[in-house]
Length: 176
Image (cartoon, rainbow, N blue to C red):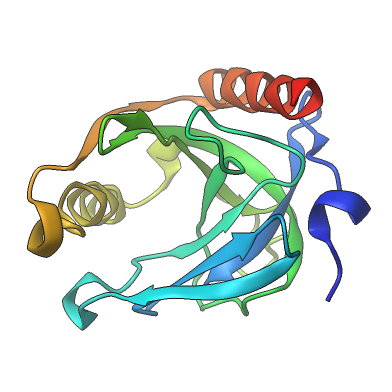
């Protein structure tokens, strides 16, 4: 397996096309995590099926969020993507998120070239309102059976805010 942090960087943040690696496909209850020190994917746990991921989930290479992990990405597509692939993605916003007291933001992205929908998604406002509600609900409650109230969606931000978070995460990676 390729070490994504060695062969990919975060991409062209200013040009709004970043690299994202898929960890968890839409609909999966498997919590698959990239283990940086081993350069492999690990099945961390199996969540209850009621908390299956409402979208694809992944990370941006060569970034570090405040929690010490690569910066997470919520990847919006109509169909699940496969664990271990990467895509060129367009940033459309950010979910400001806290997990057990630690900042764990999620950059919201779509494929950079989505001919199926004519590249219709350019901001969070372009997404169906119901999808935003589902994402908000999922991330507010997916750990409730283990530790209720340990996850909080604080707010949603625009493309500019997302890019600032990405740039800070790239700098953290460089400083490590």
